[in-house]
Image (cartoon, rainbow, N blue to C red; front, top):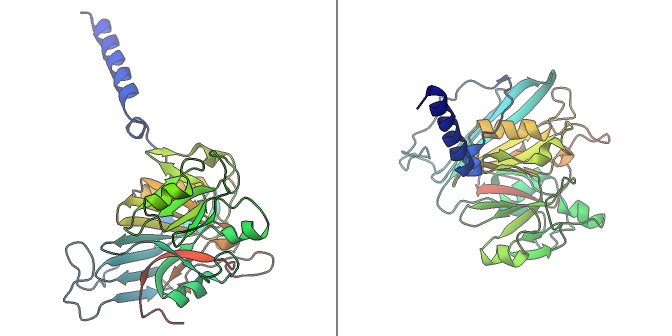
Length: 330
């Protein structure tokens, strides 16, 4: 066989192999790099076990470290490990500040929704930090602000809180609307599930044991591919909030500041790229703008920016969070 025939055969075999690969293996997500500076490595760790959680011989049940000036927040217990770092970057010639939270948990720990008022889940609103302090939540981000759609008589999406269906009114397919009402289901075993509208019914989620289902989005990426909608309706610079999954029990939260002097906000491609860099395999967009918030030990750690003359995170019906600590005080 001549060299050219062998070469052509090899190319044909390679092409056949690529067509047989699953989508996640056949495609590599293109990531736009960014130069960012964060705090120096943390060296004051307490004794830890083999998985990086607080060692049983440690004299207390919790370790908390807060250094706002340096931009670092640390929480350790026997089943929860959180490391938050603040980064400064220049992206597309504009200044940015963003926070990355590395969240690891085991046992009975899990993300869930914490309502401002469980008896009135759509009607009572409060600042994210107030909700966190009321429930003594260690770490939290904002949710989907479905109350805004409720009050303004807009399509709310598929909403479940505490195992109760609040809304079934959603789209029947994936859209590039703002928001597209993609769904994030939270389960008591720590598992999360991300889906576009029209695939699962409320009963499907309940049958699988979901306690909370949020509706916002879009899903940033899954199965090795970024969502095609990121280049359509989500290209403007705004404060952003999202949650990514590396593996069961290992999540990454991101909060991008905007609308202030030190940070202009970002598009969703930027958010997706940062989570991919951290090793996430899927990620979901939470509400952004003035709703976006990251809360640690009952305090908002970001600058919420200024919107309509106000410099506070928007009042909202709930937060999603993990961990309960008596050290979170009102």
